[in-house]
Image (cartoon, rainbow, N blue to C red; front, side, top):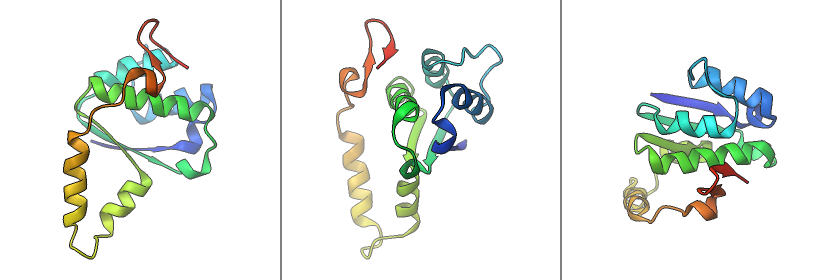
Length: 129
């Protein structure tokens, strides 16, 4: 499953959660908060989530949501998160026929995951800063 999320729709808390509920087909009992989003994302079936218009958003609530997606990815190996830029690069092959990109992707998969403290998730109280 491929899901496109518009970062411009994720700038304000209330609107962001309504948008996410619709786009991700979240259950009716979804709690409209970051903890509930994390819980739903960690049990999401295989999906590739692509954020678009990230360059048109200046942090704020969107940045918190993006951190929750990154943290959820560690718990859910079926969740892949890409940006619009990643998608554009995938469409435009390198002059070497994509050999360097394939090597870089293989190296990325072997890279250690970000730690929870770095990404903003506080395991102790399960909240995002």
